[in-house]
Length: 295
Ligand SMILES: [Fe+2]
Image 1: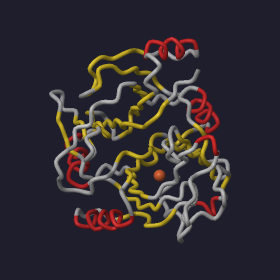
Image 2: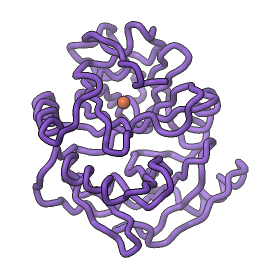
Image 3: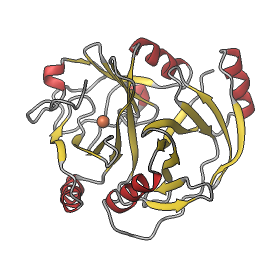
């Protein structure tokens, strides 16, 4: 058995100024905010799913990820299996609106992993200001040992490798989307970037105008990545974290096929998981990452 993750649901952030971060996610990204009694803030996508949690913390860091798992495996069975792998976990009750129980443990680098197997009811938010992404798409982390990252996310969480960029950047999927978690070999630690999915290219254009009106400059893009073929733009949020807005990410709708659904911009047919050269992979449209994007 592995733990069969099916979807990234949310990312949790500690912040010395939770109100500032929550205001950015609400007014610029267009998530709807609900403040808890303890000052933490839940932020939901326009479809009503909580996708960002902001909590008080000493530094602006990503402290955890929340995943939905296959519904047919009770959390107690998951906990027993994790225990047999030497991973301690604990069930939490009523942790989030609409989620009665979650199992919490930590991954190989100390990031909190919360899993639940009963999808919360989506409560569509009223249309509001801001970009209004479809969903939280993926989160990328710096790691010391990238093979350790692959082993944990494959063998414990049930992810598959979608693509490599040489031997230092891996893209892993838990469902049809090309990547949900990425890992970058680096002397740095923590999150590299978090990405929201937009509906289409027109939505990306509108988002760029929205960022500009909010006084936020793009730091890279628009461009099209090689691995995943997503159109991307990057900017930094008010706490200096890199945020990507993307569309047209590859999907593998038939896992048994071993290939991503064909797209006009693919250069391989079929487009299968592979190892990309960094020089061709970072941006099919032009410039590579600017100084400071990756270190
Ligand atoms: Fe990304």
